[in-house]
Length: 104
Image 1: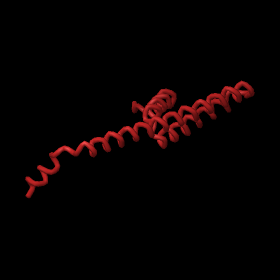
Image 2: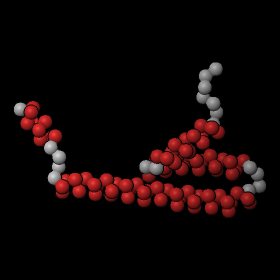
Image 3: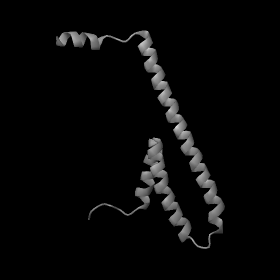
Image 4: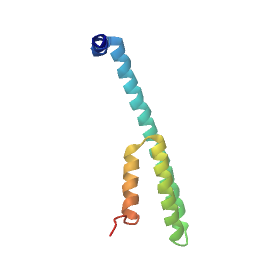
């Protein structure tokens, strides 16, 4: 009886099944691309707002605190939107700026 299952699972799908699989893959790529585009648009808006607000700051403490908060929020947003490349970049930035976690 196991031979029957192996034979059925080993057969290729029909041309229609293969076309459906291809369309599903294309749709997923399109969705991922749109999510990435949305994230980039949000990031650009954040940068423009920062460029408009930070020059009027009286000290450097507030802008630095806001930038750190923005990085955490952007990491969360990137994870939610499925933008893995951005998550990796932002994690590297935070690890480079943050305290060294190597034990002595």
